Image 1 (cartoon, one colour):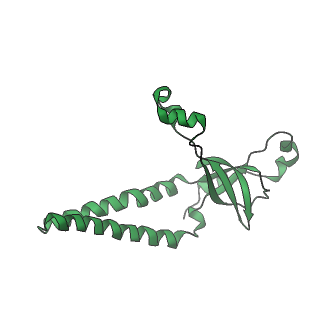
Image 2 (cartoon, rainbow, N blue to C red):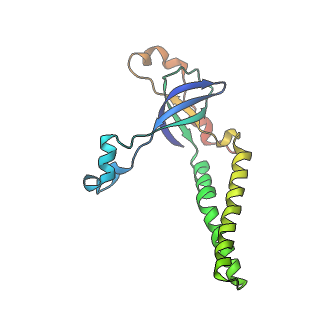
Image 3 (tube, rainbow, N blue to C red):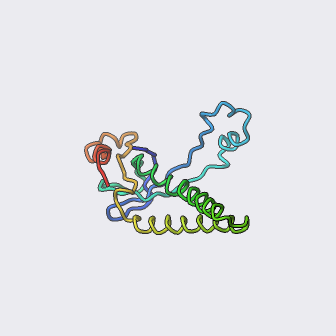
Length: 168
């Protein structure tokens, strides 16, 4: 399960909208002291906040700190579908045009046509699976801070174990 902390900013029936802060990987880079990107991140110039809709059956309130998660296999399959599949279709369609002895402009058009075709497939699939709860981020647990932790600790439970073994 890939986890990300955030803060609840809106409530829906069965779901919440969570604001997360995009993090840079610059802290793990060996060139962080001489890199302009690392400097921009330290100064907060490139700080971005993201809004994510996450499924939840917990009793949450606006402003509650939470941890949301998504299964690794869902993220990996999505990345392959969005990034790798269109490139493979582009190369295969251009290769087929080359094998058919097409002129170079037609090979380029075939590659672009294959890319467009794969983009349409990805778009249709994402529209078809948009409502699938197995592919949605979920609220795993709340992060209780300060004195609120003692009074509200019994109200929340971790949902991480519920989703690790689940299948689509």
